[in-house]
Amino acid sequence: NKTKMDALPTSLRDLVLFKDPVFSGIAFGFFNVFFYLISYGGYTVLGLILFLASFHILVSVIFLAGQSAYDKFRHGPQPKPAPVPFQVDGQAVSKLVDSLVAHFNCACRLYAETQTCQSAQKCIVGILALYVSSKVSQWFCGVTLLYLAGLLFFTVPLAYTKNQALIDAHLAQAKAKLLEVHAMALSKLPPAKLLEV
Image (cartoon, rainbow, N blue to C red; front, side):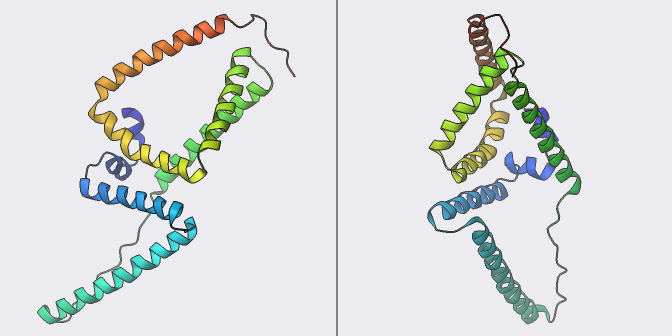
């Protein structure tokens, strides 16, 4: 939602919302080519990253050499531009790590509550969720799941911001239906708590 999007670093938020269509399009195309080469090109993730890094440096050196020769021919010797290294936003990384740790701890707490049968509802929901996840993981390999996650990352925020009112209305209807089904399923359960283990 909008609140979660605002919590993202500005550069990342602008990327997924296609504020700069050219830059976001290049990033999205690179993302697709990257996973295509991993899946069908015989590359490993590390091998592909190292290859692309070496290719990027080679292209940069050729470009700078050509530009330097052109500037020297037109304007005489020019000073070399100072390098601008890529820098990671420490605060953004810290927030991301804190969020991941909080979600991991929440998952561990839910797992422990399910394991000790704190309630019939959490036990049944936990078992079903893990079973369905195990089945889904058999249909797709890890690389495919990562690709689908990246694809959603590039498409869902943009689609949501452009059709927020319509999507919110459908989500509200779906949530009401799920709550209705959830209440109906709970009514079928025995009232007594499961024995603790």
